[in-house]
Length: 116
Length: 114
Image 1 (cartoon, rainbow over the protein chains, first blue to last red):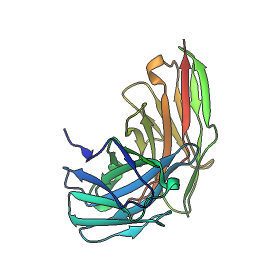
Image 2 (cartoon, each protein chain N blue to C red):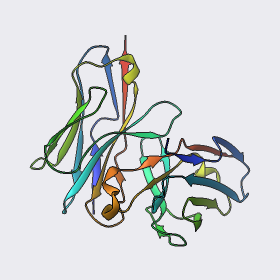
Image 3 (cartoon, chains in turn brown, cyan):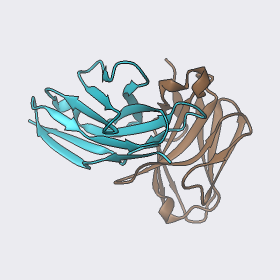
């Protein structure tokens, strides 16, 4: 069964800590995405990557960075965690449009991060 | 730029009643349209999608959505809901080219009551 795996289901971190959220997919997808989900705001795109070592800012990249050293792994980094980054973080992957990207995304189960 | 508006943040309904979850989009280009469902404490799952062809698309669990280009809408319907349909539903749009980036609506929470 194809899937996207997020390494942690729940995380609690202190303000100022550097936080790493990991995501791995086994579908050989070119694209990978990080969203945060907040009540009433839906999903907002933080960063995405369309190839190894490539990254593009989404709608709310401030306070975050990403790393994609291998095709199957896409990491989200909170450089200095703040309480306003408490949220549900969702990773997703897909093919490029020209290679089957119209099939939509496959999502991970999410990481609920609490910053105290 | 593309955007998605889900007109209802919450929809309460009794079991076996019909339901419609509304979605409107704005885009100047050809689009693909999707509905995703999120059950409590889970990630999002693809429910159905419109890419081209027939404007009426169906899911395996009885939901359907109709693409209406003139009204730029993609409303989700089910003639008779079950308790197990209680979830949050997200409408999403992407362009037909490029990096297949999806833009999501704010979500509609469907609560089915016995």
